[in-house]
Amino acid sequence: MTSLLEEFEQVGRDLYAAGLVSSHGGNMSVRQREGLIITSHGSPLGHLAQGDLVEVRPGLEPRVEPSIDLALHQAIYAAAREAEAVVHAHPRHAIALSLVGKEIRPQDLEGQHYLGVVPVVPGGDNVAQALADALRQHRIVVMAGHGSYACGESLWQALQWTSVLEESAEVLWLLQALRHKT
Figure 1 (cartoon, rainbow, N blue to C red):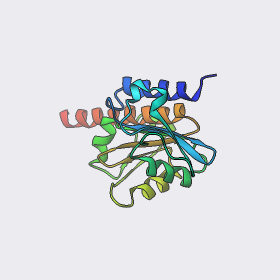
Figure 2 (cartoon, one colour; figure 1 turned 60 degrees about the horizontal axis):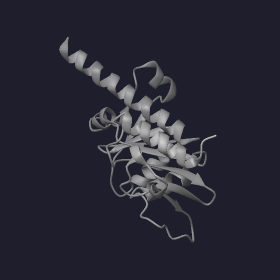
Figure 3 (tube, rainbow, N blue to C red; figure 1 turned 90 degrees about the horizontal axis):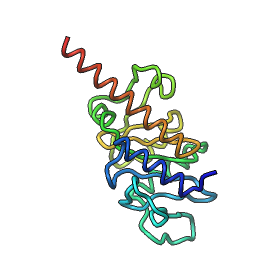
């Protein structure tokens, strides 16, 4: 059985290798008792080490700065009680599609099966609540122009939803290009 650090390292490496995050982009967390463990601000997900993980819980002063998305992760856990892990990534095709619509509707079978409709929420003052509300009913949501937030039973499952989203978004992108060509 892998340790929590190994899970963070392996999922982070996969996110980076698949081009779903840049060298220091994105973040991940897992629910822990009355708090959570989250990657630190600006940590390199593709090359995580023990010092890049921050425990956040009431009464504990974090030893390093947690991700700037900490409040978003906390809102997601509060709203989506079944969520045990959250992955925030920057899938390029999904981000591009988020700038031209209010949802992403996969056309490929895997995307339809696993994701159905993927909501796009606008950024702004109420983004934490909008993401949390959407993740009560969906496995993954895209913040317009920014990136995806997936929740799951584990970091691996949240990675799966992130990967499926980007593959589906790329298929949509290619389909639109083919329609314009013919």
